[in-house]
Length: 267
Image 1 (cartoon, rainbow, N blue to C red):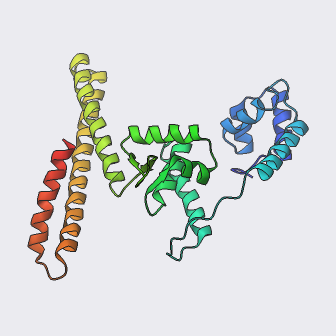
Image 2: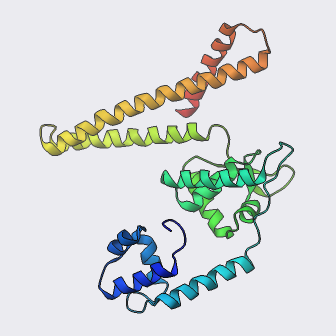
Image 3: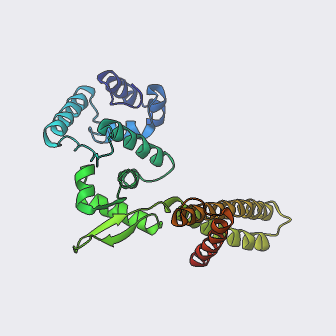
């Protein structure tokens, strides 16, 4: 079954096609599997010259038995009185993790981010992440460092304690967009320099010139969207603080000031 575990029949095909001299890419194409899956399967079962289908199948069964014996069942997702279905929450978290990974995030980074994002507090300690994800502390540490470097996570002290916990908030995607816009600014400057050095009238220079034009348009759109979002958040905050019946103009005026402050902070 494409996407699931390799079957005994697929392993026999792999052994036969390896003997015929086929490469991982062609074998993967015939099995409708990624070439990386075939490569991992062969590498951990003796390599191209020592791969045996029966031996590989037995090794897979052994690994599956060990996982069932050693790995505890996933703990239920805390309900916190919201009446949630724990199974539905787990399934959604898994699908959201896959979506993040599909967008290019490393697998462990995707798991940590999804775990934090589906937690009401938006914050967990390293030990809590290790327990929930059934991974090593080192794996959590590397994922946290990656997220922190991208501005997608912050560290904070646990109330009344000395332990650190890792937190996200509702501004996660706003900061991510800001980081993307800043990187685009760097690319625009480099592309402008490339066009100058190579000559805008040459094919190579024109390629850089076109990149400048596209990235500039992208950044203008990104910054426009970020400003609209800041204004919307500020309007909500002003309306919540003032209570019902407050004039729209007051909320809008407060929103404009808040958005301006946010721009100043970003700069």
